[in-house]
Image (cartoon, rainbow, N blue to C red; front, top):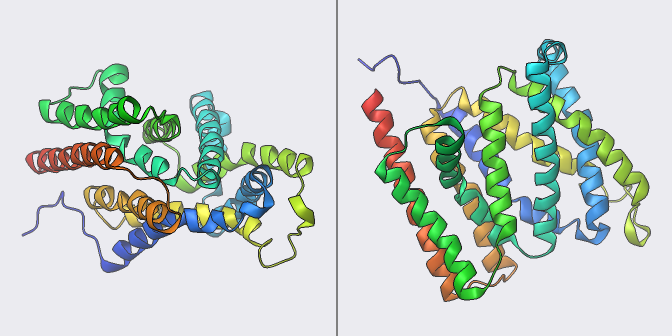
Length: 296
């Protein structure tokens, strides 16, 4: 008999998860097609259209009741406001990174998330860290040091993306807010930010939304919010340990796109640095899996 603490999952849930990850990985393809409109216009439209889309999702899922408690509690409202600002910053940096041919560096940031999670848990939450986790963290940090020391690169973009994602995840994990309601609330400030950007920075070159390429701008909100919703649905059907490992397929797809499609620089020093980061990631995932089995 299967232990009760093993969650059942089906093929549909796994398909949702894989589809979400493939969409995440294809972001560079999508946003490269919008580059002709200019960064500020693209960012503005991405932020503007997110709230209307999430409002429709909220109504379809009948999760609107989850919004009310957030406004009634400062304990919930302030963290949601903070995560909204983090999302706004992440979106800006991610689109800018794609436009400036730093897709490989963006991928590196997501590989560093386990290392940042370990450091954050130890420093801010006094969590116990095993020797294996310290080893994994050390290898990942060493990979970044290699880039700085040998190439003189300053991978601030990747580091910022990885660190901000870690902080965002830590805050959301501790909030008892329905996923759809939380996502909707995070898009409300983005709507006003996006509205200001769209007014201040109209589309460059006389382009219009009423064209095939122009439609990519409002649809960008759908394209970036959809995988989040799919991932949430998948999390109810698939064990998080499996989803956690599958998640790293997304930056891997982006990493390969950056090298083989957009011909970004990837020297032998980059190979060494990423090998250290990947090794640290694999050790971390292995240790996490061992710990999960021991708890079971």
